[in-house]
Length: 301
Image (cartoon, rainbow, N blue to C red; front, side, top):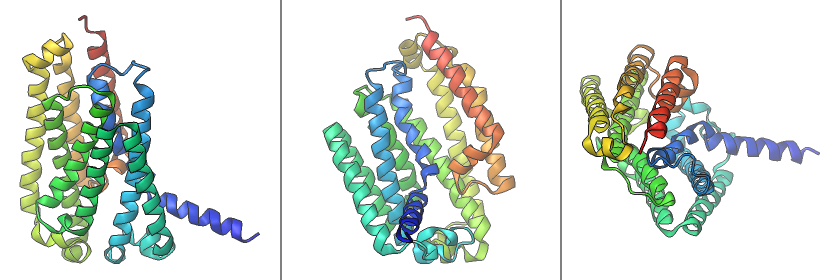
């Protein structure tokens, strides 16, 4: 009778270690579906949902990989020391096989769904392996590695539903991801102060003034690129409307709200947690989605 609770407890710890809350990042796969005006195309829905599920499995395996690799450093972190692997509640001997199964199933399923999607999935996994072992120790490249993960999600979504990707979509995604990544580094450095480099080696190469400058540059570039996208002749021709410009104020508020949380609450270390817990940020994202949907899907061709 005692083996059942133990098995359930182990399974729960494995699920926690795959960080289900972080899977919301995989909603970037739906970007191409939305902007190609195929959101109501029920024929494409099963494919994109399956791709989303496979990416969630891959992300779970990647988080297990990161926690295994970083377990000693996480033990020095005021919050991450309680993670199952770092705390010792989940043995590496159990976490490692689970990681392998998740990554193999995700990769195999991706190739079965579509070979090109499988190649992108392989690139995503290899990128994260490289990040865990090398890239996270190299200043600037560590942030670009995090941002590239979001770009690969957008590309994967477009490949699965077989639509052409807008270069604006890739540019905006990259800049937004850089903004989030630099904000994450700033919050880590501000929270851990003098002990930052003990937890994450690359933080010794950063300081707050430099990160503030990078956040300022990426913020400006994100806002400008999105605004230019909404008024681009190619965008207006593709969507048969120039009203997408109406979403710019909502985007501005969302970014400014995020900056407020980063600089006044020091919440930027976990973007997914911020989106799930901050009401005004949630409302702004939902409002952007509603307005964009009404504009794009009611425009006359």
